[in-house]
Amino acid sequence: MDHPLIDLIDQIVNKAQKEGAFDNLPGQGQPIARVNNPQNAVTDRIMKESGTKPLIVELQQRIAMETKALAALRDEEARKAQMRKIADLQTRLGIEMDAVRRFG
Image (cartoon, rainbow, N blue to C red; front, side, top):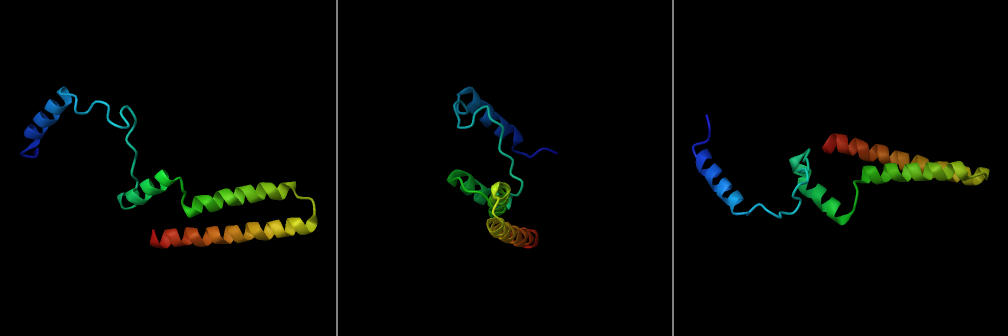
């Protein structure tokens, strides 16, 4: 059964559409952004607007960057130091992923 006000709502929306109320809206013609978790929608929007990334993503990117840098190193001591740095980042990533799994 439809909502009792559905006809009235349709009339109002159709009238607004005919009057151009929906023309030139921001994002017109673009798909609506999916919100996987409504509880995180505000946080996700703030992060997107500020250009930041979740810590997990930043750590994964740093690990990839440091691993690439490791491949270019030839000095054994420098390689060991770089491997310690990568191991530290991997540990931090594991801790962060565990926290996200546990607490969301």
